[in-house]
Image: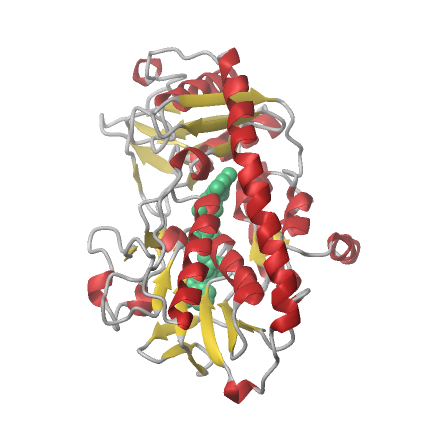
Length: 440
Ligand SMILES: Cc1cc2nc3c(=O)[nH]c(=O)nc-3n(C[C@H](O)[C@H](O)[C@H](O)COP(=O)(O)OP(=O)(O)OC[C@H]3O[C@@H](n4cnc5c(N)ncnc54)[C@H](O)[C@@H]3O)c2cc1C
């Protein structure tokens, strides 16, 4: 076995893009440009929700038509929330979500390393019923197994008849991206298991230099400086769905932290072994190898109904610009977020905007209006990212529709990843979080 390689510097894209002062001005301008429109939209939504609350009439369940939203993460949550504020009398929204709590996955890389905060990443769904008109919202914790022409079928055997269905089932992957458990306590135990493995290992290889791999590598090294951390990526550019400037900033930050970068490498991981085999024949042994690659779209629930609307290459649900599935036989089925090939970034913010298009189009179909709205991604806004690079370092990055990259580093991060703020955003009571902490 050969010696470890400290930095494969030759593979790092060499053009240097230091942070520019104009980026701060650009960021401020972008926020200022966006803020009034955003504030006006929110105000409009609040006023119509207020009026809706006073006009929606509660009917017996057997007189209601269902809009069934499958998946209650970032995309599904927003769709459900807005449907509770907009559906006319005679309709209700049913959320089918397998998890007991909203999994705030942004914090999973951090809570795979740092102990004591993992309960913060599981946000109760109580915010959805808060303020909703009586009878408009129903929540089912179950797994949808199949969507048929009339029903959403559940693992429990229950069948939910729908007038409209929204598939927001996202993607599946392993820790540190997602947990397998659907119950909060088991999910917390999964995160604690990963924390223990990282704590025990001395030599750690992280395979996959996307956002998750980068965040995990930097957190591991920053919280455990004595550990030897290697980040391996199959391409010359880290975070290759973003522009080269983010790569340059991240590569420099990680190498300054003494993390070994191995780029343009796709090593074999023998399943139970701790050895990575590189293309050159070189082998390296680690105490722990953490794969951070691969997200599988959860599209199988419509595979039998509409095989043509599932991409053969990627398994994403193919959608029209109206976000209806790409099958003219089923105009009542929509899809959004990471499971869908929407043309937008695979980011939570994009899923939020897509939800607004979907709920608008459901209203139009209910009213018999044929002119459906289309989803046009605003990549500069929806594709921007706040990346953590260790305990407190952050990088705000966005690429304008004209390709101009904007990068603003900061040192204002917190150990708990500021998750508590998200509880308020999702309408959950942070006091519940304190109670959870006391009882654990
Ligand atoms: C570690 C990490 C960090 C990230 N950081 C950022 C960031 O900083 N900014 C950003 O914008 N984006 C970020 N992302 C991407 C963002 O999380 C995704 O774009 C977003 O989660 C997509 O939301 P979604 O609702 O489409 O799907 P998902 O979040 O994948 O959720 C799908 C939901 O559907 C449920 N579900 C699936 N199948 C079924 C079924 N059959 N029945 C019932 N329920 C089902 C799942 O339980 C889940 O709750 C990050 C992702 C990860 C993994």
